Amino acid sequence: MAELLILIIIIYVVYIIFKGKKNNENESFKHKKESTKEKRGGQSEPDNRNDDEILGLSGEWTQKDLKDAYRFKCNQLHPDKWVKMPKQMGVMMEKEFKIVQQAYKNLLK
Image (cartoon, rainbow, N blue to C red; front, side, top):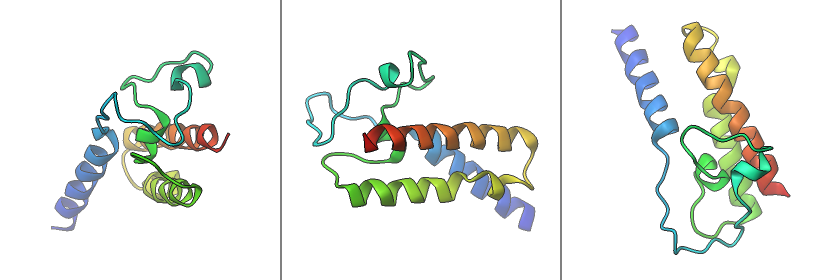
């Protein structure tokens, strides 16, 4: 029973992480930055999310909103939370964790 509950939680977390929000192109952001691809040294992301979407921010946001979103994502994805899970899951979460950290650094600039 506990294994089933853990499996359901894992599937839900992965779904939430990789869901990605679709933003309207005409919507203006208060903290709109240049393209994410340019900021990451030309590396492209497989799902083409911008930094705002990676952290779950939409519309206008403040520095406090940015900090709260970053802490929430880090709490979800921290590698120490995935130690007991299969190795593939840990590797996937670690990659997403690094993407979140980079997005936060980009938005602080």
